Figure 1 (cartoon, rainbow, N blue to C red):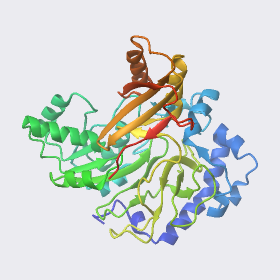
Figure 2 (figure 1 turned 60 degrees about the horizontal axis):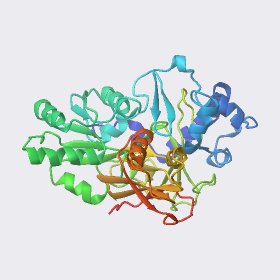
Figure 3 (figure 1 turned 90 degrees about the horizontal axis):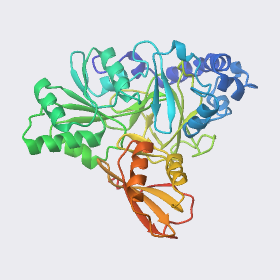
Figure 4 (figure 1 turned 45 degrees about the horizontal axis):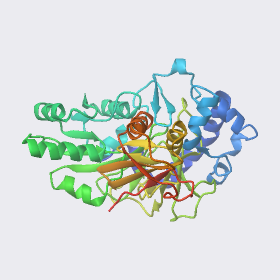
Length: 412
């Protein structure tokens, strides 16, 4: 069993399916009883009848893109939490804004399984570059590493020279963070002659990992493995040494549905990732992530028998992830509302993964007043928590298609 986190990963698929379906009625009943949102959304549902995938597919879908509006109407968590805030360990805020709970207990987001598959073991020092404030990413890695018996250096991002010095001195075995920041650290380390060669394993999330960048890491002796999760759901799927798709976590039930819809797609087709998480504190049922993927046929060569996803294949909506942070179309629309001089705005994300660049294109009918670009740029950073450029374009330059966010990055 040294190759697996536990025996659940290698059980017969039919036993896993039976266990997941057996847990559904109790989960639906718990959500109805303790979460105000689900009490209303599932008011006419017989929980005992939700014991098959077909029955589950008849329930409504809750979309991540709607959480911000729910939470504005019913603060602080939109009524989706079954445990009151007084019983939680933390509450976080992600861009949107969307507030997320963190419950008490070990490895609440269940990241230890994915980190084990990436090669982390008890006693390893993990260099954690995810944020520990506002968003829960840093704590998601922290609690998973603690479950494995690892030691963690809470690095965060920025202060590159200090980061390089810390890596040189501490000699961490593993990196946790986005692919782009790892690339920055390596490049700046090579330029400065800083020895950061102790890092041999990387658990990466928050951005796509194209084959070219994976090979770039491999060429520097770093084995890179992907983790797929969200602040709402915790771990969804993870990559193993087989590098044959993302293996679904043992504690979630994943469906692929028609993008923006509720009906499951035929096997093999691309669909929106919809997850039921079995978390008693935050019992999300048919929670639509907005991510697109498809199912890999068969069992992973690594021996893990769960369903596999082909990885990230796009978004079902206009939401994009830039340098590990979600940017929502509503945020860009809010920027446009704050400046009457702007007739139409569109955020264009350009470059390649690891070198994301944001440009806010702003249509104006007249010559922009002096200082407007700087003010809009500052607002863009305040709203999205990311730096970007602002370009003014002539009236009518942007297509009237309602699109507020355009992902123009190269993913090869």
